[in-house]
Structures are given as structure tokens and as C-alpha cells.
Amino acid sequence: MYAAPPTGMPDPFFIHTFTDDGVGGPIISLNAQALTSTAWGTANLALFIPFTITERHTYVRACVCNGATVAGNFDVGVYRGTARLFSTGTTAQAGVSQMQVVTGLSWTLDPGDYYLALATNSTTATFMCGNIASGGYGMAVTGGKQQTTAFVLPNPATLANYATVFVPLFGIFEKTWV
Amino acid sequence: MSYSPPDYHFDPKSIGIMSLNYLEMKIVYSGNHASMAWPANNLAIYFPICLSEKASFAGLWWAVGSTASGNACMGIYDEGGNRLQQTGIVAQSGTGLQLPAMTAFQLPRGRYWLGLVLSTTAGTVRGWSSPTIGTDTAKWFAMAEETLGSTQIPATMTPVATSRNPPIMGLMRV
Image 1: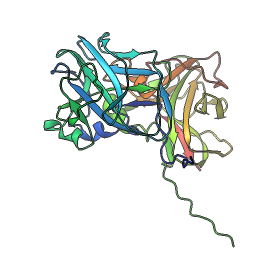
Image 2: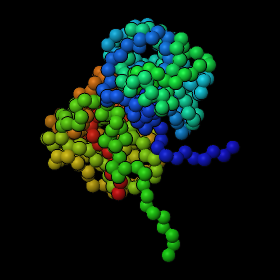
Image 3: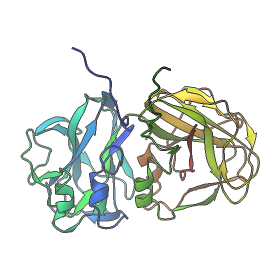
Image 4: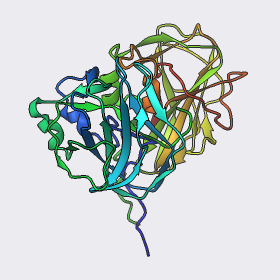
């Protein structure tokens, strides 16, 4: 079947929650521009950040940006609507104030709309996060979703509007050098 | 007379670190952009860029910091890390924009890597500074580096992860 060639800005090599040419929503929703170490606060909460790609890519790394305290386990995934396509599975958080990389992935995504998802089973685990306008509506209006009691990342997800007051930095990368 | 469509462009006139990633940079580099010494002799720093359309380019540029010294060489690579164009080795000069003379070239829509190498740590460029999310900040921009044996930007990239601050460089349309 014929598919029109892609147009517009190509997809970045690294899709993460603050990629202004890939995701974008978190940037325009921020109260302040600095990212700070923020405790997850609610065990088993999952956050879903929308993104779109225009071409087929294979992602081999999932990355989170750890804050000043690491604890518990996290799970990074990609959803199409409520369907979980890929996830890292439960992963012990390790490495204070650094990028933690999950390797050994081969997540091929076709053009379309997706969610990046992150959940942790710890209230005290911290990630580098942006602060969102009160009630989290800043992310809700860009299509962000969340689910409580969602660790490990469930399939399917039961999505509710984003109501969390922070957005963490995490993403997926096509290259192997991080 | 045959019809000639207007020469509209959607990408900026100058495409680089100051355009595509400006918002991200503002968020994670509190030092804004300042003069910085090149981190190591003959070190190449790579930074990804995207073009949304085919366009003609006058050349490759970088921003010289407070002191120009030694030589520099800049190239642009395809998605697979193969060099497409380069400035050749030139003496670093002036302050601010350095845009070595090149034969104009075209690039189609796509994903590319800019690469810049300076011969000496005495040379400076303008770059983003004071990362706020730790030493891994550069990784979030898919930046990479390569230690070279000379100032010649290589024909093929062999990138590794980097923690360097991003130098300001880009492509200038005709």
C-alpha cells in the first residue's frame, strides 16, 4: 500500500519528555524552567507523556534522569493508546544524580502517536523533574495521562487526565552510546 | 517564461544549537551561553540536527569565544555517521561567528550530525554552560565526542558518550 513520504521536521534520535521537537508538552507546561530532584510521592503511580513520530525507528536504550535519592524500582514503557507495546520491566533504580540507562532493547515503532510511560513502586525515589502549574493541568491540556496502582506498567492501561504537579525527564534513544 | 515557485522555507536561516534545541538548553543549562575553552586538543564534538526540507547552504559555522587560537575543522554527517561536507582545516579567527568559505551545497530533509574539532585547548568557542541535571546532561541531547589524532574532522564518525558542554554551531542557508 502506498504511503506518502514523510514531511515536516524529522524525528530526533532521542525522544524524551523535554525534546522540544519531539514531545514538547512538558516544556510549555512548566511553571519554572529549572529541573529539580523530586520525590515520586505516590507509590505505583504511572505517568504517560504523549509523543509523535513520523517515520519508523528502533529504540535501543531507555533512560531516566535520577535525582538525589534512589530507591525502589521503576518501569519505562511505550503505549499506543491504552495498549502497552514495550516496557523495560521492573528495574532497580541506581545511581544518584545521573542518567540511568536500560540496555538490550529493540523497540521498533511505526509512525504514529504514542505515550512514553514511567512508573515506580517507591514514594521516595527521586527523578529530575519540571514543576507544572497547579493541579497538573499544564500537562493535561497537552494530552498527558496518569494511572494510580500501575506498577509494573499494566496492559492495558486505564488512563486518567494528568493531575501530577511534576513531569520527569526520561526517554528512549536510537543509539547505543549513552 | 516558465513558472518558478516562490523560495519559501520553513527551517530557520541559520540552523543549529541556538535554534532547534533552544528551549531545552534554557531549561538545563543555567549558565546560558558563554565563552568556553575547548575541552581537549583535537577533540571532536558531535551534535544532532534535523532539516525539515531540502535547502541550499552557504556553509558551516561556529561561534568563537573570547580567544581565537589554533585551527578548527567542522563537518556535517548523514544519519549513519558518514561525512557529507566539511570546511577543511582553517585557522580560528575573530570573535563571534566564524563561517569559513565553502562551495554552496544542498541537503535534503533528514537527520544529521554536526561535528566540530579544535586543535588546541587555548582556542575558545561560545557554548552552553553550567548544566543543572548533572554530568550526564549532554547525553540528553544525543551529543557525542571522538578523540582524533589530528584536527581533520574524520570521514566517518566513531562517537562515544560525552559530558562536554555543547558548543554553539550550525548550518547557514544561502
